[in-house]
Length: 275
Image (cartoon, rainbow, N blue to C red; front, side, top):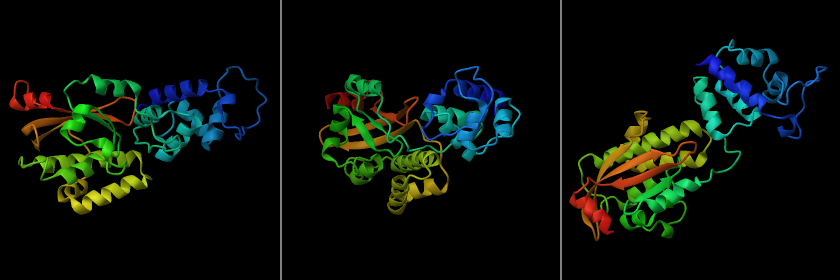
């Protein structure tokens, strides 16, 4: 835990809030002191987070023990932190802070959708933490499936892979096992951040029931998604393809960009360009 950085972060966020920014029903301890700065007082943040004033003061002075996830969550709400700021707070405190769904689903960053259209000839799509495909380019639809014809529930990477296994996906030794374990790692990481997400829990149960490789990865506590997984595909028009599935996290959001590429100059690279 970086206690001094944590203290500095809390102080700066507290000073950046105005009393008018707090919820309408918030009540603060009475104080005879004149407000010397525009930000909230320490006792006001403590009241909003329902922690003792002395404990919060020690946090801002880098003298308190490591706060629990529950305290961190309360402080994040009191200080009105964004999702990225909540994660940063958790890292400073050496904790993993569960995400909140209070603000509803995040919007795909505008720049990310623009990037999809600029990846000429490179199949790519954007997924959320559940591995739902939320945006895609024409090359991805040509390579994998017409996502627009799928229902929202069907538009999940692991469900799509299970449906296409044996047709689009073919027998590279270990490739499908790697993909399933990758999916288990991604969903386990999402589960840490969204422990109350019932839809996510249902996905895990579904995949663990029907995919032994996913179940194995889940039991083994696989938590490190691989940035690249090689796959062999049999495409109805492009033929046999050996491609790499590359995943890049989009900073400051819950989304990731997934791209399918092939070795430069290979028949698979030429076939991808022909789609």
